[in-house]
Length: 316
Image (cartoon, rainbow, N blue to C red; front, side, top):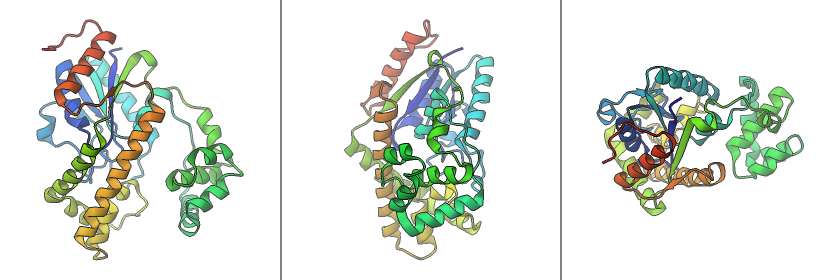
């Protein structure tokens, strides 16, 4: 099997442009590994690449899911498995790119086989979270799943809620499922991964500028269209970065300036968590701190030469 290339990094770090150029140089195609870019309704808000940006390089698993769906990591794994198999049959290299670390972790280490959580259980846990906050969730989770409760602490309300709803729905702690993972999509010799780690100050500035550009490109109209559909605010697509604040502005609850500043702040915080994820979950992935496209491309091509000799590509 031709080794796949996995490109991970925080939001706005330039992953998309790099993946397209890598695919072009190595005769590959790009596969999405971002949980928001799967939604067709979030072209602008998720910074999904446009046809112009794709520049003739074939892309897969972008914009193919309805925002009304609760698309899961398991569904993505099944689709990515089939996509990689198709590329292999056609002699194409797979270049996976995205900021959803869980996708890449599950693909290379396997995914816990957790049964679906019924909507009524999810609603009950949401009500508990609203009433008691993250501290209350952790207090409820600790006696039944101390391993996960200790690992998450009190600041991660979303994952605490997920762990507690899994216990309520199955009667088993989430940690039990995590210890019994499905086989990974890619074995160790079938992929190489790199993590983009640009200077944080410059990245945060870029995040702010990109959001301002999104507003000019139609992000507010995307938010308005989703609001008209009266979708569940707990759906993943409705929690895309900036979406809750844009929705609040569209409903007349806050000013445009307040919405923009808070959306930028939340996205910067998300980027900070992505840096932390890279450090904890991908400690051995080569880092590429340079923000320069030429430097990044040079590093990836050099790494790839080492695992896939000879490479029929122009490295000049």
